[in-house]
Image (cartoon, one colour):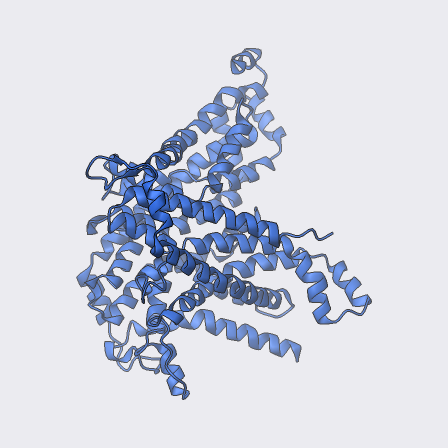
Length: 298
Length: 269
């Protein structure tokens, strides 16, 4: 064993050997129990029917055949996809807009940044309860303002067409502050000389944006797209509080469906299979995004 | 002209992000019938909404549960995070690179795979309806280790060597030399874990059923969707305000650290 040897030669660097294992051990023991074991057990669980109370029953691939015929799960996946399709572009647009503003020489920038970031730190539960009231059909503040201005009341959370877009709007509102900061860092990393060259060549504001800012911002764009995708896939508490997945399952997210399968119906094996399948989808989507969003800027 | 437009846009943003919170806080002091109205201030300031929250649910108990969970998780993550990160960054041992790659791998596995089997593990350990079930699975955190390791790597090895020659143990080096030199990274990791742990709601909703062990986000969520609030709007908002206050106070106090800490999760990738 090499640590014994180094201990006997008594050199300073060698002291690291044994103590290194001692210091890292608790983490890896914990990892083995609370990550390794569940990961392996997941591979067993997906082939069983289990309600936790009665013994496990081996069902082979039944959970997976059931999954592929589960219309409601695919509905939940589509709902989650719709959420992402609205949420991500909206988020990129709004956060880039404010990042660009905060990157200019306006006064009070740090004050504005502090306020924009506030929804990021507040619990999703708080935001969901707040939006439920703001967007309520009869009593909601937003609809009261709309009707005071002579407009129609919008069935934000009570119609199948509006509910998911409203939730996407809410999630965007909550997370924009975070992505403003990321884009701000990205913008500040663009060398001023690039803009000087663009200026000397007589580029318009639009050209400066499309030829300098957007291409040089690409690495941050990839980060933002990937992070908001992963965040969006974990959509749970917002529909849980706002709509319970309704109306007509229009806001049932994949995670909410898995939760329901496990905790309302006690289908642990099936829920584990859904979780595994959903994880594969997440990985594939993120890999595809990296493939298509990431570009070689040179 | 361009500047004026810029300020107008910034103020629109300010209203969009801040006014809903202002509205929420004011609404909790309004009598129930006025909550839907457009008047910004209550006609009579009333504490009825808060009174109902405190009379219906043990929210003080939930606050205490949350506090115990958050403090235990944060302290544990920082303690074991620094020892692990120190071993990975500054000590030489066989298998170190493999160990580091394992940590990176754990971060790539989507949590939806782990959710159900981790829950069944906690059930078989008999940890449901207990704070142990909320704390122990989250006592270690890979992101914190990455942040701390990154910071430790920048420390000059000379100082550590000098201390070793003077006969310092690695533990003493870690806590008396490395820690004080790495305060920013420790604060970053600490805040990250603190926010995540305070706001976590899915896991408690799986593990806890009895009211006495619920954390604040879970209790407030169930108060709102379950029958607790009797569909009254004021108490739901009041409970939400109570849930938001601790983190907002902490944020306004340490705002620069909060922002850079959360941003670091995106920047290292």
